[in-house]
Image (cartoon, helix red, strand yellow):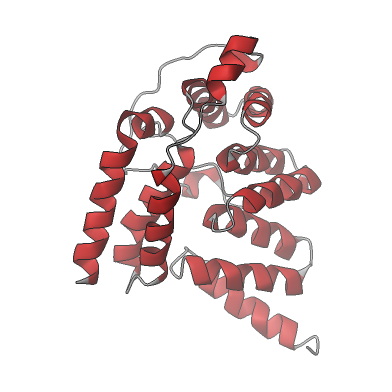
Length: 238
């Protein structure tokens, strides 16, 4: 029964997002919202590899006022309802195999900004990261968070670029901003936990991992990291 409900939820998301989701979720692009992970470990959203068109230099990094108006168009209200339902399915998934497609669908909904302008900038930013042009990616993501300050995925993706540039303070700041907008953003939680752990803030990292596992019990490597941290933190006398 649970599997049937999950499939129904995934089908409903496809109907809800339609073309907008397809525009905002470029096929074959690496998932770059997870600070702390090597690029090679971040799989494409659908397991395929597709050529990405050369979208050129960031002329769109400074959109004109009309573009800004378009960029602030609202995301469909049903998006939040669908996310809530999918998070509930994800938390109750019986195993990693059933959790994976739910998580991937959630990630596609995160990318759906409701704005063609932001969608274009995000595709260029993802291409820039894939090409290791991090300075270009940062300029594009700066434009995204300026145009869409309530778009959590913009903050999460920019945090990853800051991480690549070893700017951990700004990465943490952007991750916290993403989580303020989308508290269930398990990729942002994963990135935050890894940075906290790497910087020696083990108690804080453990709390973040525990929160992450309540949302996504099968997040890769999260359970192992939490178990290791629990042993280390207990050894500190808490």
